[in-house]
Amino acid sequence: VSMSIIKGVTLEEEMKKNPQLKLSDIQSLREWCEKQPHLPKIEDNFLALFLHSNYYQMEPTKNTIENYYTTRTHMSDIFCNRDPFQEKGLRQIFKFAAAFSLNGLTKDGYKMIFATLLDSDLSFYDYNNCFKYGVMTSDIHFLMEGTNNGYIFIFDVSKLSFGHVTRVNPLTVKKHLYYIQEAMPIRLKAIHVLNATPAMELFMNMAKPFLKNELIKIIHFHVSLESISEYISVDALPNEIGGKAGSVHKLAEIQVKTLEDYREWFLLDESTRRVDEALRIGKSKTANDLFGIEGNFKKLDID
Image (tube, rainbow, N blue to C red; front, side):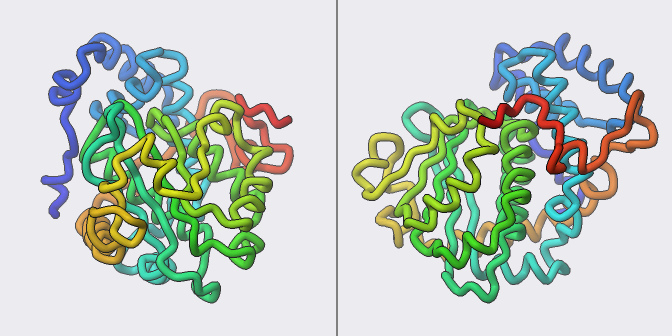
C-alpha cells in the first residue's frame, strides 16, 4: 500500500455519515489547532473523529486532541518503534497474541474489537508489546473506517495466568488506561471479558485505582457464551471460542498482513504526528507530568 493510497476516510464521507458533523466546527477546530504551535498538522478526517468521539462538544474535543498527541509523544514504549517488519518484539508478539476487529456490528450498531493470547507460554509474553499491537490495530481501523456509533472490546482471557499478571507493572497499566480513557478518539460502549480466570481478577485489582467509575460500570465478565449472547452475535466470534468467524490464527494472520501493508503510515506517524514541547505555550509537559507517581491525572479520580 503506497502512501498515496493511505488517505483513510475523507471528510466528505464523514459528513455524509454524520449529519451532526458541521463544517463550521471543523473550521473552528482547525483554527484552534493552528494557535497551538506545539501540535502537529492534523488531517480533517481525524478532526472529525475527535469531534464525533466527544459527541460534537468543542471543549472535550480539544482536550482529547491535546491528550492524544501529547500521550503518543511521551509514551515512547508504545508509540515508537512500530515498524511491523523490523521490530523484533512485535514480530514475536504477532505469534503469541491477536487483536483484530470482528465482522458486522452489534444490534446497537457498535463495532467489535477482539483480543486474545494465542499461546500461554510465558517466555515470550510482553504486556507492553501486547498493548502496542492492540493500539496499532485500532489506529489502522480508525484510519480506514473513520467514525463509528460505538466500540465494544472483547477480551478472551482463557490463557491468562498469574505468571502473566505478575509480570505487569501497575504504572504501565496506569499509562495504558490513561490513553484509553483520556486520549483514544472512540465512543467506548462496553468491555466484555470472556473465560475470566482468577488471574484476571488479580489484574482488575491492579487496574482498578486507575479506572474511572464510568468505565468500571461497562466492564462485563462472562463465564459462558450464553451470557455474552445478550450483547453480541456469538457467530461473529472466532471458531475456537464457539463462533463462526473463522480460525483465530487465520484472522490474526490477516490482521498482521494489514499492519504490514500500513508500514509507511506507522513510520510517518512516528516522525510527524507528535507534539513539539519546545513550542508549547506555557509550561512544557514531560512523561512524569502525565504518568508519574505524582502524575497529574487531569480528570481521573482515584478512590
